[in-house]
Amino acid sequence: MYEQAIVIRNDLKMGKGKMAAQACHASIQAFLHAQKISSSAVSGWMNEGQKKVVLKVNSEKELLEIFKNVNIEGLPCSLIRDAGRTQIEPGSLTAVGIGPEKEEKISKVTKDLKLL
Image (cartoon, rainbow, N blue to C red; front, top):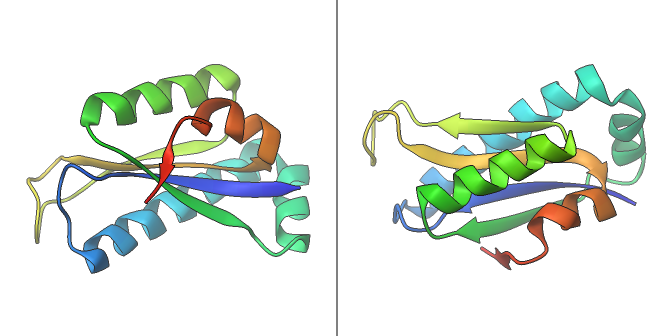
């Protein structure tokens, strides 16, 4: 089974709409990266219904640690930096998108995170 994981910073206290927008940015950017490096995973994910899981971290440090570990594992990913036009400071790191990729590969990095 394939999935995509979105990791959102919970400490920024973004509104629900803002969090949804950041999750969408992370999802799309990670998907575009996956198309370049793992077309078979993208095809599998598309055929299986595009499962997504949204998880949370409580600091920029935790978000960057996840991003680092995802890169070490060689998974398609994205790191989202907000433009700062609405609720949060410009340049704030808000989310990481991971995959699509096989669930077991993603869970190796995200297994200790809680659902948003």
